[in-house]
Length: 567
Image 1 (tube, one colour):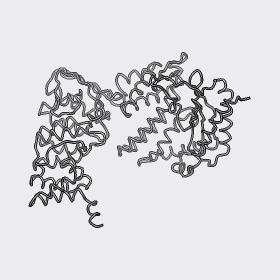
Image 2 (image 1 turned 30 degrees about the vertical axis):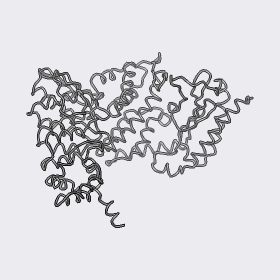
Image 3 (image 1 turned 45 degrees about the vertical axis):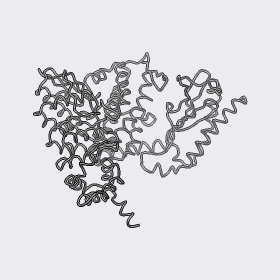
Image 4 (image 1 turned 60 degrees about the vertical axis):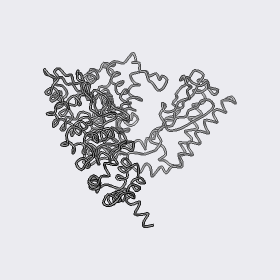
């Protein structure tokens, strides 16, 4: 018999479940799952959390819901804790029965996936516990999904065009799902993932989405499945996890294919995920090494092995270069300062990038020279120093341009920069060359057109240095215009008077003739402080200068002003 207080607590939990069912029942489940053949249901898991007399429920991993913490990271004293024996002996069976009744009377079959797990997260007097309350597998839905996955994989083998990111989202999770595939075909999984990435390599944003989806699925498998087979995990404050190898675990007891997939996951995280995720990739390699994997140790020392050794290592009497694609680092040790040393190192970098080395990398430089570009605001990193050192030799400038054109890539950044100092690969070479000689103005323009203004602003610093070095004139206006168009609103330049000279205005109007009005408006904001101020300048001007300023106003106002006139 349940005591009154426990019955009240149970009522709160059941109310939360009812509320969740009502919310998901409002969805048009059929239209959602019909988007792709690889989805047979929407919800595959739900977590009920009960603490401090409050119940919360939602689709989540256990790690995603947590009890409140105080400033020291301790649990708040709970007035609503339940003895663990009551949770396991009374609460769990009753909640399982309550949820099963809901599942047996689904308003829409597609609301629940082929496999559904109902977890409970409870605060007891002795701390937090996670309990699997109910797990249900629908055999018919499972068989249907397995057939659809097999059909999709068959079609994928014949496919030559890019794939749908939504299909990759589901496929990546299905292939590492133990309920679907108790024995993972790891070589097939890796092959399929590589094929998807190869099919989508022509579109960088879409490739990035597919890659992130695949890595996320692999990471979930590694953390929620593979690691827990071989390690005990203790969760510390602030989300930290500590893994302790289980006593009976050794390399001989581990499936070699799954170890390969785990290492593939670690390498993918390190190579492709943001810098804040790379600690996880390193942690995975350390755990594999702890289990006795020589491959993991070799990866940590030499890289993934996917790039031939002839491209990753070079040593002679003037310079030594070593590259690790997993950690995206190139170590350059200068033995003899001079033109030849840097020429060989730059050629090494060019060949390395052509061989598929990550473009978001960093250089670890061992050199007595500590040159920096004459541009305020750039990171004073080893990567920066290497290129500044090399730029001191004019004979190397053509080679540096070759490197820059190989390195420049939208949505990639040097790995030793962040925040306002974030910069695309090739930045230091382009900036140095752009300041050194007008011959490299086309290179500057090419670079600026690849810049992602949402995640990079160092082009603002270069533009200021460019104006200081080359001035504002008919020769520089075309390149300066491209720089302004791809700068951010925070760029500070005092060039209005120079730009308003008639020869320069003529060159500017010619440079923006193919631009959209919003682009011109952006340029006007940087130079004049906004369209209103440009209109004011045009009103005060006379003769041909006034006409040209008015043309600029019209170019910036575009459709907006035309619409205003028509109304």
